[in-house]
Length: 481
Image (cartoon, rainbow, N blue to C red; front, side, top):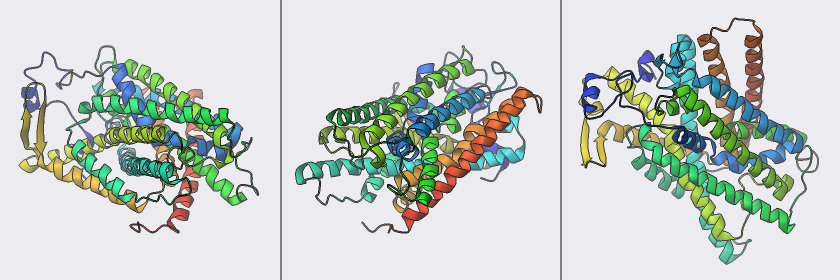
């Protein structure tokens, strides 16, 4: 990631870019083609990013925390995420949220408001987290695809049949699909994919909720719930209770993670009205919608399965029948994560490609576009550098997913390490700097206290998730299937 601040700057339009826009009626204040995003497309991006694999583990997380801590933690994470996201929307433009200089990426916003050290720390946190999320989505999509095959096997062969299927081939298939989709030039081309993915997230969430309700009504409850979740000495050891509680915090943090791409989403929004006003509405819609689903999935899943709630209620076979509905739900998960992978990966693609193009401006391999589709309605250009490096990125994600296919452990770790710095610390620090909030004032102290509390939660969740990954690694043999 060497090369200084140039890596993350998208910058205003070049002469060549201005020429490419000469047939457009209007351009934005930075010389770029006018953005067309609305509150609804931004909401779709948010819902696509937020409602993902995390929702399927919330029943398990509730089982670790119980009826008091579980709903409380869900609610607090939603409030913190919404609050810091609102702060972050005002950092899209420097100094003036209406007429100030645009920050095209999260890193641009950090560079405009904070010092160089924090800028690089943010870069490490953001792009490691984006990469980790891509790996996590590869794992989850393959597990859901594998579950379709298992559901059919269990239906025809019986629930005690040996229906073991290799996850690796599904991960490779998911990776092949991402190689093609990764050739979409930029984030602005993903609006349709995000809308499809958002619809899929609603569908499989509704199915999970519906199946949980059906199980509750049938009275076929396998285990009781409790105020404190898993009972020490009965369900789990004291040490195990501590680790799984911490890991549950990481799972919930992962379920709410999207701040790292909020600025990138905001950069797709047209104005007027001001982008921060539109994004605040989209954030309210996105976070409130996802929180509603999270409470329904988490609470109903916990009631249905009690303290024996599986790590993923659609793939760990809490539900066997109707098998076709379970199949359809898992298919929706796969389609959703196909889009979500791109939503999280495109900012990383753009950052690296912008940096290389500016560092080596005379290397045609980096910038030369080959027209493949030139019709009026559909245009597509192939860039060889984009083809090669994005393919390498997808292959690396796929290989790591095969080596570390631990759903809850990986999800918890990714959520833990990214929550405090990206969702809490940097938005608060940027907002304080931009609004010139006086040090040691009441507002400054309250913001710092919030940051410290969230740091402690992140540390606890990271420790629990690392222990979970280590425990899983001790008994796992990669490529053995």
